[in-house]
Length: 205
Length: 205
Image 1 (cartoon, rainbow over the protein chains, first blue to last red):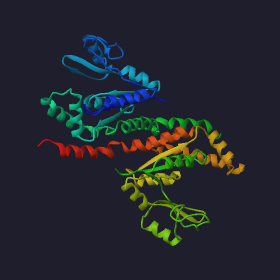
Image 2: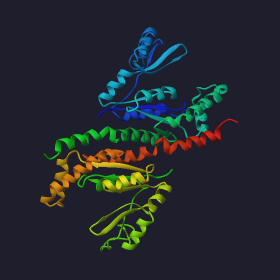
Image 3: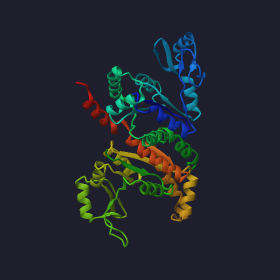
Image 4: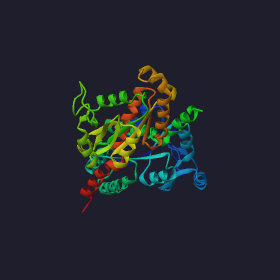
């Protein structure tokens, strides 16, 4: 059975990382998608694990040869999703999960409509998102409204996703994400070949 | 959150009953759909639990008033699925499961395209179905080929279902059915109103 690509997006502070980590920890046949970047490697980072580190020229070759599912430039560096490792995993029956912002996620869905499943993760309210961002301490108070405005815009795009997970409780949210991943493998399109094969080899002569 | 109607079909001998019983036993917010019939009540049966027992005339009124999701006549008696109890359960957030043969299931999907989810349950092979039927001892040997021919026809209709569960292991099959039921509740169509409500009440003035 082929694997699938599960693309997870959602505002900062809704707990996407924790959610994806619970999935990776529990399921042996799930792997993270590793992004490519043209930014220099930092101490402690591992090529092929943290990112695929490539030169700017090489990254532009990847763009030109259509080898990236999506990419964006951020503070002078490129970041993108290499297609080949995802294709290989899917063909080998391995599910791939990735955390991509909304614009990239929608590009991926357009490129791999049958293989990519989009899951939007959100919190029960913007108030919860605000509190989580304050608690994490990674947003300066003056920038909070800007971050929440971005969260509002991201939520307005949720309608383009296949599923919505409201992370009010990590156990429940993780159970929902696992259910989505399993149910997607049970869809008729994924399994009808099993029945067709059985019908064709068992039809009475 | 609204409930959903999960319609399960599949050849005799694939373990549909066992599968549905594991779901009913584990989930408090799931109920069986009780069919209506015009056949006389038998000792041990309970009206409203085994079936809704109604007269032939009353059954024909139900047909005429479009109160049945689907119905069929079998050996001179009517059997059908009353719509009202299912509508009520769904509105009250209760999931309903039912075991209906293929023709009825497809009628239900046509009637309730947004609320009904069709799940086709099959065995790993016709050989397994044959063995299970022999083991159960409820098919005369001379009728076995007819039953298997019917199973083949039923399997040829699986393409019209939303999901396929291959019951080679009851624990795994039951996990898959539960995953399908949970994932269906996470679909964007079911949850987008939560985000829309939050967006409308939190938009900055």
